[in-house]
Length: 208
View (tube, rainbow, N blue to C red):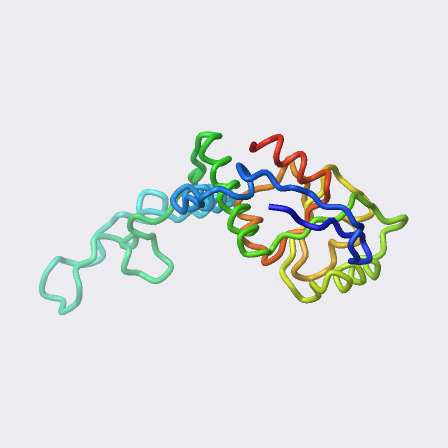
């Protein structure tokens, strides 16, 4: 697949880039995408939810009243779970939700979602650039030039561009990342991908 390389004004530079079919033209594998997204979301969980069980609640274990004949429910002690503010039966405790996946599985997932984006013409390639200063207005103008205003967009660069990152961080629906930290969830979560020429080369080196 060939794409025109645009400048930051959104105009063609007269150059084209050929995307590697092994990375941008593969048959998507939905199952590995599911596994990778599941792992990403699980790894974001703090796992700090905790509740008190009967053994952890302070209070007397004396039986409140006799078992039968009161007309009310039987109660073993003030630690019973039916009392408001009391303990919880089988409640959550701190745990680690993270799990591991093979590197090849995660690479295949990224190839799958990149290929899907390319097939849907949701990738545009721009020449490498950075702003002279960190100004949000510049990035908004850049999005307008590409006709991506109010579109969920992921900008991927070959390396960290400080001014570009600072210019984009306050814009709703816009995320920036680098080719070496690009993940499946971020790609799926964006409607459009903006890749710099350097980012395309690094992605193809990593996944091709």
